[in-house]
Length: 188
Figure 1: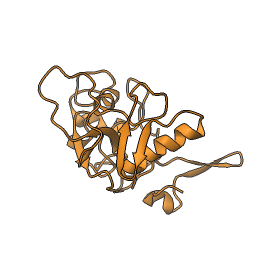
Figure 2: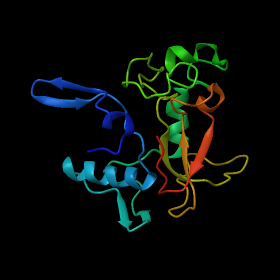
Figure 3: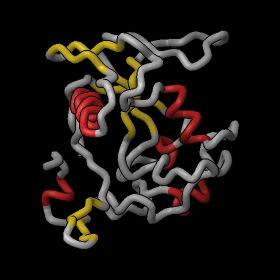
Figure 4: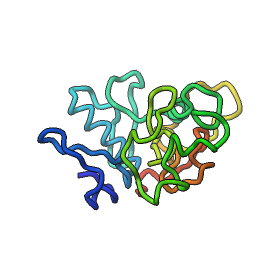
């Protein structure tokens, strides 16, 4: 069972035939939980594990590997912007954020089922708000120019998350906003 505060209260479940499905996004998942999930999903689908995990040490031996992985920070930002050079996938002003996101201004202080808001231009839901999205990258300064989709270090004291969450201000739900937490930190 997922370490999710809102689902633990019995919310966000639906039945499809005899199978119970999850509609709410999982929160309270650390970065370490997320990389372990990627490996478990890879195994479940017959793919090689993408990460080598040794306790709290996580490394990647082949960035061209076929297993599931977290996006790099650059991939996460690109997906959040939906290919647009704007602060949000829909433009630079936060006025339309409520159409695309559950955030501090409309969430009623809780997560919501994925896909209830408008998808971005790539057809992705909840890239702004609802729950923060973990990225592979550690918190590093990539410099001003010349870096295209860096992978970031294998080891870092902080890992990056993006996109904002259900309690975030509109400013923190921008595609360009980055936050960071220790790899073992969990928050709802």
